[in-house]
Length: 287
Ligand SMILES: C[S@@+](CC[C@H](N)C(=O)[O-])C[C@H]1O[C@@H](n2cnc3c(N)ncnc32)[C@H](O)[C@@H]1O
Image 1 (cartoon, rainbow, N blue to C red):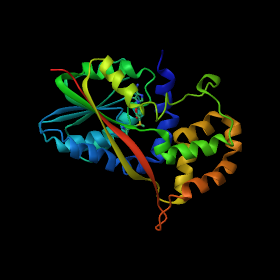
Image 2 (cartoon, rainbow, N blue to C red):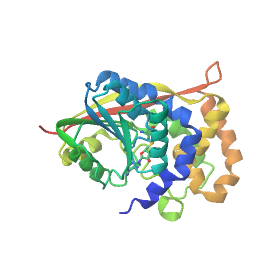
Image 3 (spheres, helix red, strand yellow):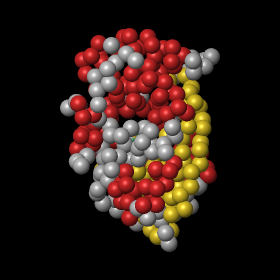
Image 4 (cartoon, rainbow, N blue to C red):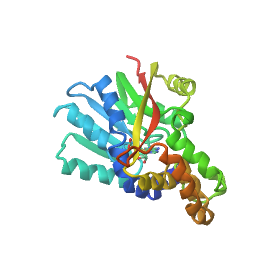
């Protein structure tokens, strides 16, 4: 199966949308990755691969934490994201963060690394087993891979309730019925602990551990931004985009309906914070 469609999506329409809402990804998700780094600090001098690194903020945070003797390497299939990562590392003068473009499912990831990490970077793989195998091959014996993935949709109402709301208004066009590029499987593809642990073990990882991590995350600095975010991104935004002209015509109606969904999470200062739930999944490469 070719990944061209997914890679094009991440390099074009999704890159543009993520850039528009960059603040929410970089600031909003920081507390989640910080919780992982706090639990499992990477030792000074280690080499760490950041899988599906997006804007590279985690790669840069890791690079800072491992000292000058360590190297953090961010990989992403979208060259536009990697361009942003390189700019940020240069601006922030972080010399031990490096970045490269590769499809994690099938291309050489370099290494061998002491550790691999991914914050929401593994849920969009068409062939996740192949990607996990490739990640393990890039690790040293005894190395480990920690990934953050969303748990089930019902515990992530900021995505799930918005999707349900949009589905009531906009006809759903499946990936097979459209020529539009798309993001791949989607944010809940790794939510099932049994499926994920079986997949990791089937490619040779051992001692797979899950920790549930619940937290409120900022989905908009204002109600308007939270509505725009739901209209553009996540499963709700993808339904609207893939519905083409029909989706665009129904945007006004959807926007009104989404106001009810997101306003229940509005705080007194106007910002919008919704409950979220993720897994921290750690798997070990045998010695
Ligand atoms: C939801 S974003 C997460 C980005 C970042 N880790 C974060 O937490 O903000 C998923 C990232 O995975 C990348 N990605 C998707 N499929 C990939 C693949 N096959 N190989 C490498 N990167 C991939 C996308 O380009 C995108 O940057």
